Image (tube, rainbow, N blue to C red; front, side, top):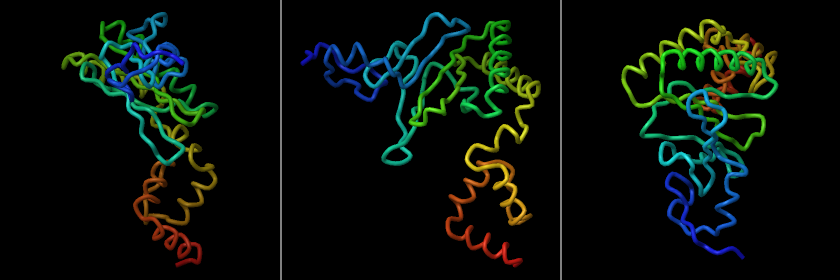
Length: 214
């Protein structure tokens, strides 16, 4: 059995609790969050369940969506989140996000913006969140938002192709859109998921009625 010379670092799930040396040393083998400062890909700061290598810049929380699934999310008092999206393995948006990401990093570096890139793990091995954070400085935050808006235009970020085919097959989404018509504005998978969460069984009744031609 390992000894307990450590306490969990601030900003972790085991903050302040005694941790054995082996648990502490191996905690970041499967990190909750991976942080890169600036464009540097060599120095990596990791956050696990008890170890935080960001020296307090970031903390991480687990959000449970059900007893088995959930996702990690970073928080910070030193940095402001200016962009977040999901890297979905094998989806069309993956290549688009890579182009946007590279362009934003290039422009941030040109403008000497102090930023961090954060990748948070989820229970879904095909899903990782991509976040870009900027040091809490009003001018830098304004510049960052302007650069991101420009980069989104360059990569056609708003194209529905990148926000469909994630939760539902596209053909099913199109069927729902035709059935519901102008009753509900559905463009993306998230629109339909939000509508289902809002209306519950009432949505099913509407779909059945629409299918009957009502």
